[in-house]
Length: 133
Image (tube, one colour):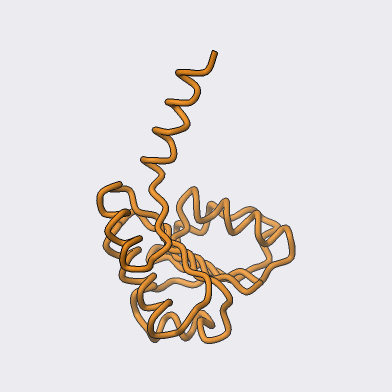
């Protein structure tokens, strides 16, 4: 699978590493080159400095040949904007975005975006552990 990951924080770097180790073609975008230090030495993908909300940067990253796009920056608004660009302008078949605010996640899901809220996921995990007998 050819995947573009926007955001090379802990989650983006870990996802890139996991997918790369399985042989997928990975391109990681981040606005800060220093973020790429999180990628492991054996990472065989591409690390590209740029903003994933910029169509020209996305083209340079190879979005026109991508099978999937994942937006995992710290900003909900940037993630949603980039996800919409990937989905609606470039027609990427699998688009995922991280949304910290659970209320926003529900709104974006209603608009057709596949949004994951780590806030909700972790709260559910904690609840399950807390109430487990």
